[in-house]
Length: 88
Image (cartoon, rainbow, N blue to C red):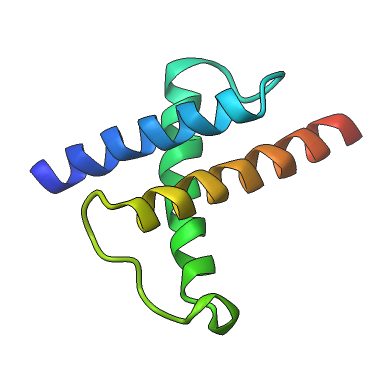
């Protein structure tokens, strides 16, 4: 249970940093930031596992590499969200 709570908090921080780096319209509020951050952390983990980025797994827990990939994944999600939202 504590692991799930720590991932939610980690996602909240990563999503908040991504929103600070890319201000503007995004999925709303506190819950939207958590969702973007948690899913962004997952996307960032997938990207970190690609051969062009060393192909290593991001270690569980809070460390700089996992945080940077989580923020990067969150930014990618924000860009995709804005692109799709702009098309409709």
